[in-house]
Image (tube, rainbow, N blue to C red):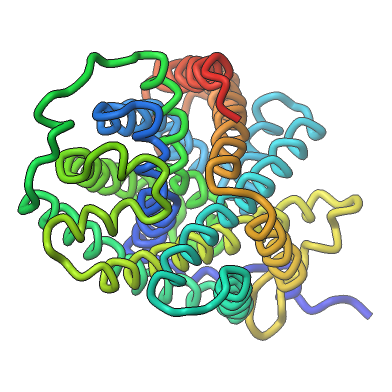
Length: 400
């Protein structure tokens, strides 16, 4: 008996507003609530500069993704781009699996951070918080993409509001003595911090993997990618400046709840921001689970051992098996590894992928110059160079 048509098709239900909210949500939820202390440990008061450098590293690649998403609007995203650019199906498969791994580790890092904020509000064991939050998000991801993105959009409003509260509170807090007497910048440390801060920009690349569920992808995808990157960069600039201004470095460095410290310094109740940070984590984890499952779905289209993942539920229209596998892996990794390790590995994986994706676009532009959305030829070259330089800085910095 032949399968129903919808068994291998996703439903096109997403517009530019909801997709932009998804992008902002996964980027903001991907680390800013938990990474500020880790970045400050490397860059000190120059943590805002590290976040700015991370944004500059990400910008050319984001534009490359915008063009590629209109050339090849597939759920497998990066895997399809690299395969089309290099002609190597095997390399495309490796890139796709790397994206799945990166999304899984990213979600695990954010889930750990969210659980850390949650146990500051609710007296439950850390493992219980991780598993409880994780299972709830897996259930939402299984129900449907529109439902998942609607929940994500609600979380996005909450978490962006939380960052606005942090900025407001930080500017009303007494100025830290460290901020008044800054030390000389240590540029190798700033470089390493930028690669860690890059983790907080993870998300724009997830947008392209929703291509098969987007209305008018040739228009919607570039708008959402560019808008989400601009919005998050502005938010990060404000947040990191207020963090190093309001909280002494010795308190900020290594804190599992760095933005709660900023909020407290301005007189705000820590419980409020902790609750918002949990919402941010939920958003980041949900978005990464949804994305990684779509990549597995897209890879399954190519057949082979991944073919079993190229099936959507006839009622929900979601890749159920892929979602369950990713969700289980997220839970396991979040219970086993600390945030810094998860962030470092994820950033390394994605920088390698960005280098390959930019290289693929360079090759595609030479063969087929025209595209529904076209960027200047130098942009993917810059994206490739920035990704390689960031990888070198990460390697030389010796951060695991």
